[in-house]
Length: 163
Image: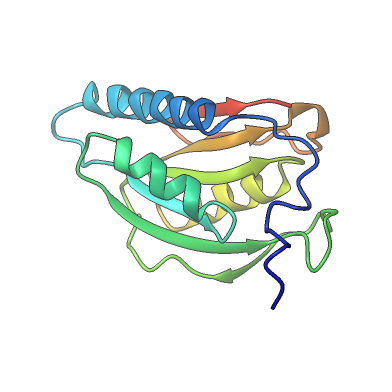
């Protein structure tokens, strides 16, 4: 095995430094903490639902910085197949295990691009009985939006970076 190759060899440009990423994740976590801390004390804490597998590292960093009792689950939605261009028709291939009925859900996605996947997942969580659905994304690409999704209930959109 050659030691001359690195997993970083294919990186052409670094868009954000580790410090910038860490600061942005902390900011997003603070917004979520503040929004749900100021909610009615009778409201249960939000359920965090990560979109696997792309969001798992972002989700891990995010929940470590949210100062609330949380429950975490994952859903798997596939819209890219084996390529890098969205097929436009996201398929759910892994269901949430937690009961989200009557709860506030924060859907955590690495990239919100066309809006197809997020729109499909909001509808899915609404059908599961969620009271509200917020979306938290590390990278938002509004210029590529094809579906302008509607958040559920008192849901908010937490956006990290835009290209």
